[in-house]
Image (cartoon, rainbow, N blue to C red; front, side):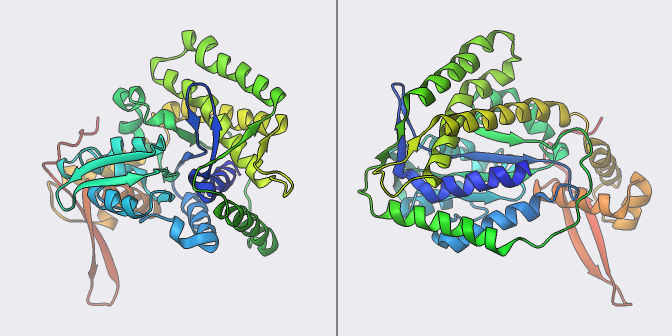
Length: 381
């Protein structure tokens, strides 16, 4: 449920674009949101949730969606044409691993600049020379597994730089959730949300190019200030160093979420959305849940999913770069075929392995994988 809630907020954030702003003394706060779904494969249906969010955004306005994968140069070129678009990354570990390669240098820094919604950003590219991006605004929706993100979540530099602090990280609760049968999406509810987003977007299309100033009611601002002091001051003295930035950005998350909620409640009689106390209270509640998710992510990445991934990695490394059939991986690693396939998909996304399908004489297909040597990948313990 938390996954779908966060994707709904991402949809609203993307539909708004850079056209609503809360003027704060320290900065202008635009409602651009980054969301990371972090859970094991299959059980929590991350890809299904992402696909639903992507489909609904296309129903509202397909031009609001950036390409799924891209190099920094291609991303800059795309943003130079239209810089207010959302992006969906089905396997975030692929982006993280690619950013470490020479040809992807500066990738994460570019994303972080877009998160900050700069009025103008220029960068030199090989293909197009000096390229200018105007009114940057890129809400990001991504997903991965704890095993594949372990190395990146434990990277102190990524926490210190504010990369992880910019995300609302969602991790399933430790307790096993009750089984729920697959259900058809209620078409009326789906259509209602799409209609709400379309009406809001149409209304924003009629405003001047400059962003509308969102009004924050006095009691809402008082509640936000209390949370701001708690997160950016009171809690800072007893936090692990890699969570301090996440707490520091939590008040901004709460304000952005409240802006999204206020935009969907925007009365026709009002010139601009108005953040009421119930909007900011809900924003703070969700921001707190995202902080819990960041803390849980650091714990989960140490345990959940590691055993299967490391056993498959070890089997492939021991094969010395030779192709290993899926059934051999299953036998050596002592995992199920489904577990092995999920791990192979993730390792292929971060380019640690190569996977191929071979047609056999009997017409069946055999899946094979091999370790890609020479990438400087950390060896399993």
